[in-house]
Image 1 (spheres, helix red, strand yellow):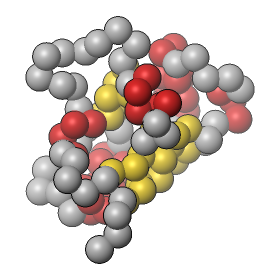
Image 2 (cartoon, one colour; image 1 turned 60 degrees about the vertical axis):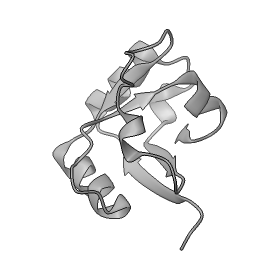
Image 3 (cartoon, one colour; image 1 turned 45 degrees about the vertical axis):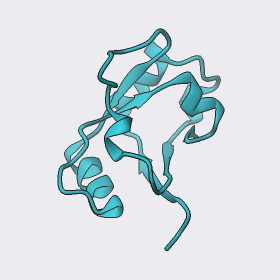
Image 4 (cartoon, helix red, strand yellow; image 1 turned 90 degrees about the horizontal axis):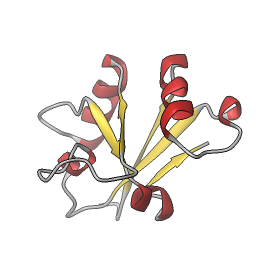
Length: 99
């Protein structure tokens, strides 16, 4: 069994506009995809909003129906995840990488 799984999603134009609104990323026009790393023992639901709410610097990347299906199948989940909670910690640790 792999030690981690990486799901790569290609971004739609409206998702790139979300990057422009919420992120501090440079050269947003050159970004086409996001890679999300899931490590065994972690909870796939942790990519959603935490029970204590959003923290300063967090924002949600909403997924298309096709992206939700791709994540569900790749991680072998029962329920699709409709959004990914993008946190500064996830970006710094490279658990979420935009490229």
